[in-house]
Image (tube, rainbow, N blue to C red; front, side):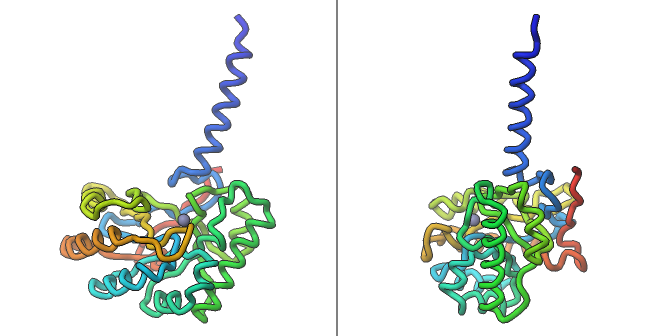
Length: 251
Ligand SMILES: [Zn+2]
């Protein structure tokens, strides 16, 4: 019995599977240090991708003011240039701004130079809008981490990648009640680590997308999470308050 024809394709498939897993799994550390949850089950990091979005982001930060929430916004560079005042407002209200590339590129298909440009142009757009230092964290669009990304992270002056521990398909149009029910799974008791929750205030395809279900679901949950003693943290509070840990790469 000749095992080779069986084993070899299997090994190749396994290797391909590991590469794909490394690209998309929120918990994967194949491609470098990654933040993927907070250090305490009482700490929630609410993170919002694909903005700024003039139709939603202002409502969101006004809602956050009501409950003293600080959140993290992973912004798309081209939208930052279109709405610099909104970016300034997010920053002025005390939220953390982070890099989500310049055009929402799928980095898997980008060359090293293209990745470098995507990160740098977004960094520049954000720094120009806020008048502050450029971001220290980034999240790759779709969660796709190219093996080339890690070297470019440091070159862009970024500290690392932020993935997530919970995602609720909020980018799909849906009745608010459905998202409210899904968000009940945040902050499940009996765990030592807390959630980095992936949500969306924007849509990478265009400005002005409808995310009213996201706002409505948070209007429901923020007072309840607050009353349950939850603390809202950003990546930036990681060193002082244990918002999260940067895990060392395993390989
Ligand atoms: Zn995105």
